[in-house]
Length: 127
Image 1: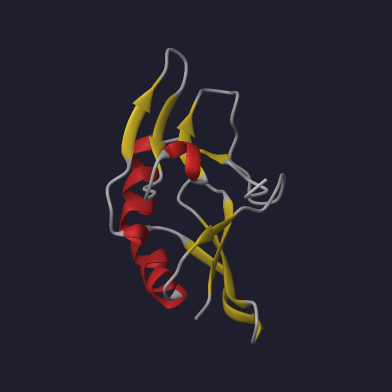
Image 2: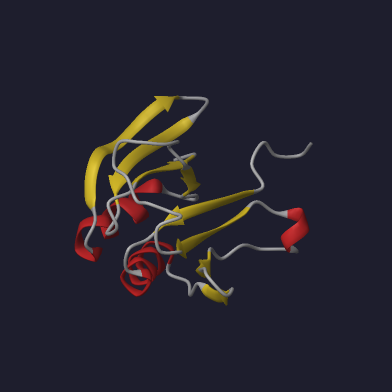
């Protein structure tokens, strides 16, 4: 097993708003993928889908529910520098819960935010 995670879904109440927020943080467009009962916007990844960890913003009615306190805390890759993401959180409509914090010299930095949908999301980078 190459990665412990191979897919994640971040719930949204307003898919377009969430897409704008995350596109502002990543500086890249998210690809739409819609199924009969679920609308998704795929996080940008490099390489073939079978070889990478992927995820999506998801709007599915009541199957997915945003939460600031419940459920797992997902850490998204913010390399090369976490500060570039942090600088865009509040101006894009999010809230900083835990600012850039060093985990350790060997493990880099993390931050925790509340996105525009009310999800608690973390970011990690080496610097």
